[in-house]
Amino acid sequence: MSEANTAPRVLMVFPKFYENSMWNFKEAMEIQGARAPAPPLGLITLAAMLPPAWQVTLVNRNCEDLTDAQIQAADLVMTGGMLPQEPDCLVVIDKCVALGTPVCVGGPAPTSTPEVYDKADFLVLGEAEGILDKFVAAWESGERRGRLTAEKFKADVTKSPIPRFDLLTFSHYLYIGVQFSRGCPFTCEFCDIIELYGRAPRTKTTPQMLAELDRLYSLGHRGHVDFVDDNLIGNKKAIKLFLPHLIQWQADHGYPFKFSTEASLNLADDDELLGMMRDANFFALFTGIETPDEATLIQTQKKQNTKRSIADSVHKLYENGMFVTAGFIVGFDTEQDSISKAMSLCISQTGIPIAMVGLLFALPNTQLSRRLRKEGRLYENYAHTTADQGDQCTQGLNFVTLRPQRDVLADYRDVLQEVYDPKNFFDRVRVVARRVKRPKFAAQKLNWRHVVHDLYSLLRVCWRMTVRRPELAKHFWSVFLETARHNPAALEAVVTNMVIYLHVYPFSRYVIREINGRITELDAGRWVQPPVLAPEAESCGKAAPVGKVVAKAEVKHLAAVA
Ligand code: B12
Ligand code: SF4
Image 1 (tube, rainbow, N blue to C red):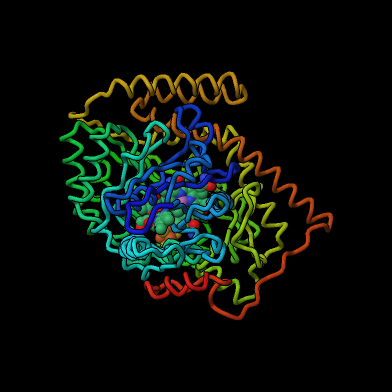
Image 2 (cartoon, rainbow, N blue to C red):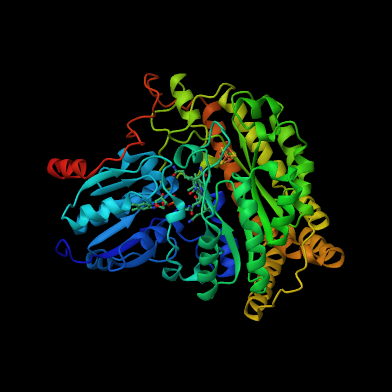
């Protein structure tokens, strides 16, 4: 380990995600030759905040191996990520402890459940802007253990540096992320965004964003850029001020990027905003629909989705050039037995090909987990799953349900069965093929490297759909040819949805098998309900209170204790 006050060699490690997840888009990555969907934007943002003299290298465990030699050669390892990365993050911490390299953890999962990461030398919780300088000062003064917690929702994102995109190998990823805002004004009961990033969206400035795009452009990235915002339209005034500059930047550079993002469905009510997003070349949007049931939307405080035709709202987005993927959840308290039919119908009417249907999973430190705990319904180990267990599709319902659990599981299975049946899926792709109106940009420059890459990927899709999955071949060719004839501009959206289906189709079959297994256990009386948490306190478990700066004194105190 180097002496205090000399610039340390920092190794940033992004832990592995679970293998069994609807979100890993495995086949899409194989087809595109990528190794992970998206890069670790948190870690490369953090890297840019460290003093320039600190030498940073990055290992993304989803793309490459991490060797003991790399850990031994580092003075400090910095790691962290989201909840599904917890098991691998703990593996990384154990390796560092065994090899004697100090390890610092941070990011959304350690912030939500810090007690899990006790073995790490440093915990730096919350958003790094505004707290990292305290960590750097502690390190430089010789501290080698401690905990720092950022003041909640106070990080000034206008001070966020340009992420260290230069640490990335772009070809490892399906797309590259950038972030304009953090936080969301809504109050959905199950959401941890508003707990982690707050309800008053904080936005970067226009020059900041354009500098990030300039950097990506000059480093050679072209194609898909994802605005990872929790809700891009959370602060409508700010996004409307930024978009005209983005449109101009795209025109000036020959439209090198196409954008995707996440936004609430009320985007459909704002024609001006929709027009701006179309003109900036937004081509895909993720939105949380959750359920078609009005009473449930009200109970879960997702009022922005009520009093509207969900299908009409989605079609409006199609007309403005964006195809839509959406999240749906089964397992809410107010759900009725009719939910499986209603949800399948809603998905069919919207024509959303990729509907991420999951079971309700109470995330730590949310209004939902606090309520369930108060009601004595939250399982003790509700927030933790192991690497082989998978995501909320198989591990959801981490609480006592109000309807019989068997009924909820059966409804969930029925929705998956219906929605990912090949005929039904391709019928929805047909809606995209007919409705998505992609704009034409006169100033758009063709990037031949990309054209060749896309054609090669298309050939691989055709081969997989025809040879590997013969049961899909007739549907695939029928929709593909129809789109090519009637709306060729929508081909990219159509093919993208089909590529994702190559992962989601077998994955949905796997989930159905797992859910049937859970139902069999219930029917045979072999399932034992896990113990529930005592309903006493408002907070969930041992999570440390976030909301105060634990200053250097406490770092020192912890160092003394250690
Ligand atoms: C993009 C994204 C994804 C991408 C993948 C991203 C990737 N790199 O691989 C996709 C779409 C695949 C995805 C999927 C999922 N995601 Co996601 N995702 C996001 C999102 C929207 C943006 C992440 C991001 O880039 N943020 C921008 C950077 C700058 O912020 P940051 O990562 O928080 O980093 C800051 C700090 O946390 C800190 N920090 C970060 N790391 C470290 C490390 C150290 C050492 C330190 C000191 C500090 C530090 O410093 C940074 C600057 O302030 C976040 C929400 C959000 N606002 O962050 C959710 C989020 C991370 N996802 C989440 C979840 C739960 C999921 C899913 C399970 C789906 C779901 N929502 O149910 C899946 C699981 C994926 C899988 N394969 O299993 C949760 C995590 C909750 C938690 N407490 O851990 C979040 C917070 C939001 C949410 N509720 O959906 N996700
Ligand atoms: S709209 Fe999305 S980000 Fe906003 S509170 Fe609801 S679930 Fe969270």
